Image (cartoon, rainbow, N blue to C red; front, top):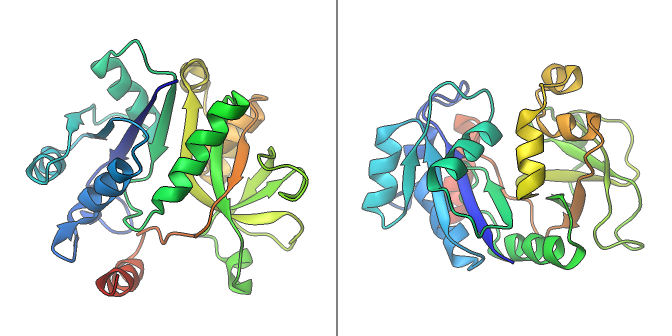
Length: 242
């Protein structure tokens, strides 16, 4: 079974415009993500973007990138267009990695890919243990509630995703990596955005609202997503010493 990794990226992020090309240790964030994805050795890696500057940067750093439309509402729509442009017939799974997590753990990507294939799952994602109490109330950190503990099931289903919660039972820090079986990706992008999804600004709720199960693999680490200037400075500091 073959997996293709697609990383959606764009310059026009609302909170930190231009973030894909911000440098850490002399390399752009998007090229860090590309290199991490490639070193996981799961399959071919492609960046999908609406910005020529991102394509130029990725290619300059030895990566592969393709130009997609500017009209996409979500990263998943961008991924689906990229898949159609590439037009490869032998792909079984698409892994969607966020373009703003330059410190993503390659072992976690391998874990998700492996669990998807062993379980012949439709849609999977990652989550990590929460160590900081403030995380439960931090709206910038998405949480996932799983139906049963990882002790009982190594690839349990997600019950819900939320931005804030008082509940702490089977709640984990959601990591924005998704792995789609090709048919489920096609189905997912054909569905209208759900009320739940729009209200919470969480695309994965569209799957749950349409009875598409999402399995969750336990990750070793919680990478910092670069959403704000503070995130950028924090991760720059962390990666400087790695």
